[in-house]
Length: 137
Image 1: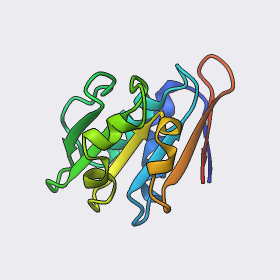
Image 2: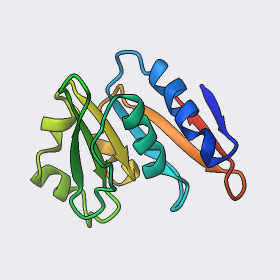
Image 3: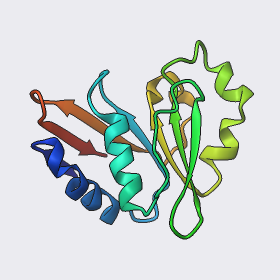
């Protein structure tokens, strides 16, 4: 699937399309350079899923937990600051990745060997100042 985000004002519409196509897939790995909009897009997706809490980057916490409107948890990871893969083992990544709950993962390349086989890869490509191409594998 290819989604075109022409400007930030369209992000909620694009997030709804993404959610409509999630199916029963649970683990999503978001790739993109710094400033590509990974956290911003995840925030919009969470909003489309009914999360009413404030969505923030888990850069320092590594993982944030939110609740969908039905009370189901969503886990949001940011592995940007981990020094090595052992840190993912230390916080029990498998309890999250294999929980059956939605997981959104930023900077997944730092823990790629740990990602589930059925992970959905989402690449955000900067086209210009506001325009992004979002490729969903």
